[in-house]
Image (tube, rainbow, N blue to C red; front, side):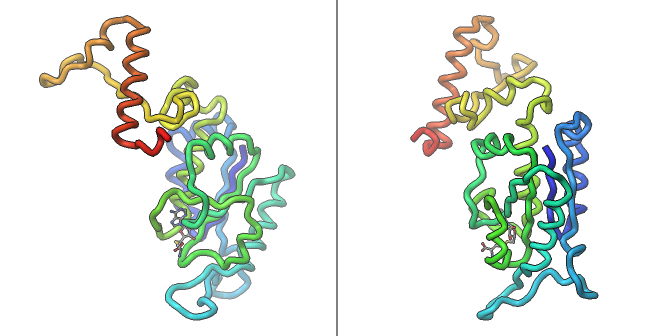
Length: 227
Ligand code: SAH
């Protein structure tokens, strides 16, 4: 999968894409990542990407022309048709289901806003618009990173043990529920013992315990997932 991001802070991505899973994904050539500086598509000395809002009010708005020119140039960098996504609190809420859906695209372009967000007309160039939750961040870079990591770890060949992504929280194979608790050695830590059933070697019992735990935990922490 090729992923391009468009941002006024492209260097913010360096640390995230060059460590851990995203680094491995690039080494395995499952991910081809490119960050672009929106200011490269401005035409004035000050490389201006924002302007004051029509109608007045606080804050600045991201200008439409550099965004569209940048998108046209980035789209042309590769023959494959991209899925263009704007990061915005007004978008549909990102989820494990959307992450799984996105694995089918060969190319994603993620557009990061700043200030009060985009000139509304820019959304006409979007195939989708995503929010990572009901809170407002200063920019779309972190939401783009969240989206990239959630999608790329689901790509074939990226994670070593593919069962680890099948059974986890929110996944269809886990019936959309939260995952069961995990334990590792020691079996007793300062009087806190690992549940007996996990030491029993009885796989049917362990499976049943995990399913029960998954259900009761979801009921307690996230009853909304049960409906
Ligand atoms: N005025 C806007 C918020 C702008 S925040 C509003 O009230 O809806 C500036 C930029 O940060 C946005 O353009 C978007 O790209 C990004 N952003 C902030 N919070 C976000 C969230 N929860 N999900 C996705 N993007 C977000």
